[in-house]
Image 1 (cartoon, helix red, strand yellow):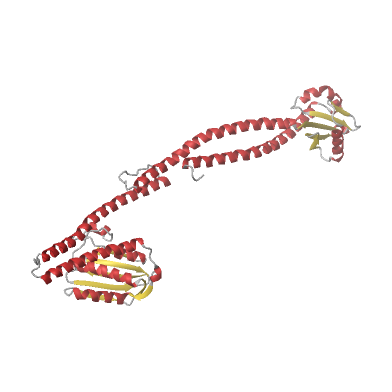
Image 2 (cartoon, rainbow, N blue to C red; image 1 turned 135 degrees about the vertical axis):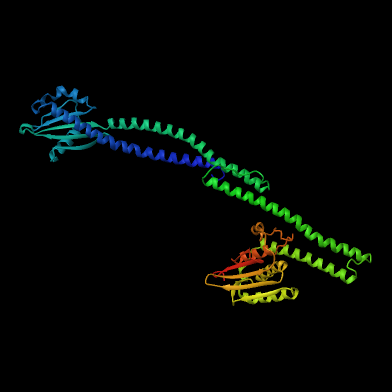
Length: 447
């Protein structure tokens, strides 16, 4: 059934349930009706006996034969009177087997009236024996009726109920099918629009005027569509600008090499010109490495088997020492507590290097690094005294396609954010009075 449409599945389930209920009722109703009409038969017999006892005196029971026809009009009830002297008054003959059963019941009956039933020739006879004691003359009034009356009532009523049930089922299946199509229509629309998203056609908005789960699903898909549009724009901008960023050093290298071939030295002499070529090649190499490294983080599963305990404060000191050599005009101020964490040490080196590289790019004179821990988390703060970041830049600061204040399209902060997420840590940035502060938070349970 899973290969059928959702509307058909809903309709089949509804139809199956209604059919099951109908079949269940077809077994339950006859038994219920039989029980009801059995009680009704006994009530009819008792009512008929009350009429007889109220209409005739006991001494007139001998005349019952002449009046039985009027009494039998009470729903086909038959009557027998048995006197103390075993005289029997009845209109219609009854089998001896049934009469003997009545006499036995009379002998054992100790109450005034009692209900009985007797199986006779595949038929059931319901009867009541009423013991009267007028004028100290014991007499017995027996009223009886066959179950053909009950069966006729059950059959007639059950047939009508079945007809009504069939009509209700047929009439309910039509709106059920319409309801199934109504419920599945938004999902069909969602399917069509999601297929468009899969083919990178995300210009058509997703509007579903519902407040139920389907409406929430539509809202989520619309949020996804907007995110894809945003991501697509960022990708286009990134590809356009990164291609320019990669093309520039290539053009410089080629033009300088061509000039050198022509015995022209753009920087005055051969060594200076070759140094510039080397700088541009290094810049190109850095961009390519960043792209490859980020792709590796993005598409390869991260193995936590590489996680080991290491000293974060020592790692920071080692990394800062490497940067000091090329940043002699920048003063580094370190306040580090002894801190050990669990993680991939090589990846953490990349994180610290990328953040320091970004901080140094905009720093004027000083970079401060603070490492503290409390009962809940470890906090690493790296700050510079450079210009503030524009508020509109914060939300995309750690995305792979973010453009820096100076127009660069580096991936350093995006790589750092990706590695930290793989370690269960987080990073954010904020402006301070002078400069920008980067904050890394590491939960102690991760450590």
